Length: 302
Picture 1 (cartoon, rainbow, N blue to C red):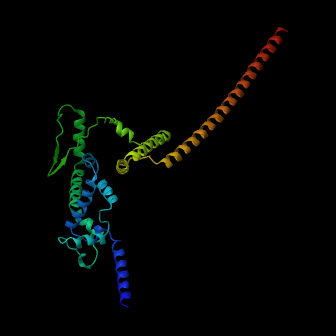
Picture 2: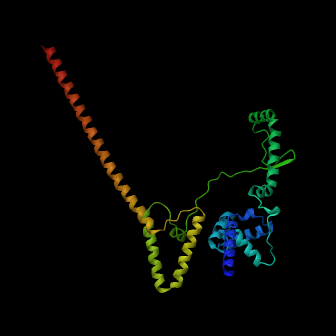
């Protein structure tokens, strides 16, 4: 009987935990200290795997995306509570007033400063709209004499009590960075499937040779390749190094090539046939005119 009660309690506890895990961590009501610690853990988990240049290139959102793949971060409420229970410095914060704080309320509290800024901006726009005719007059005067009062734009533009930053965007063309030999060798992009397939097969052959001599080194190289693949996909780049998919793509491309060649051949045949028909009709008309001309001359001679 006691064992049955324990099993029932355990099942009930599992069901409650499963339902709790459906609630997002941000909506549970943890205080800002715990939320900041969780965020920092995500960033540190990603930073441990990234080089210095990669840390500079990737945004915090991309870092969190990479951190989720490590399996070391807390993804639900029960995991956070377990972590807090193990850490003596932290305490579980219960939802206020006996209910869970909704997402909208949390966002409203977090974005109060942003709302104030929007209200200030709206007030300024209303103030400017009342003076629109005057602003148009100034624009016309400036258009008539553009070189009279030319001044260098300031970094900060003040209008009343509000200061706005003057953003000057450079229009200089960005030069494309030339890839190094290593970057070019590890780049698997484009639609030349035959070249990509040869590249992948060559890399696999090289790995097999290394594996025979030094299995540990081959394992490290494979891990590096996997990491490079994850990094490139996180940056939004396509990595085409799957042999099966490349073979499938190459086969599809060859079929399309044969189909296009056949269609072009048929089109050329039709065009040639049309041209021959047109030429025959032209020759017939010329011959008809010649005969008619001879007949008219013969009639005049009589």
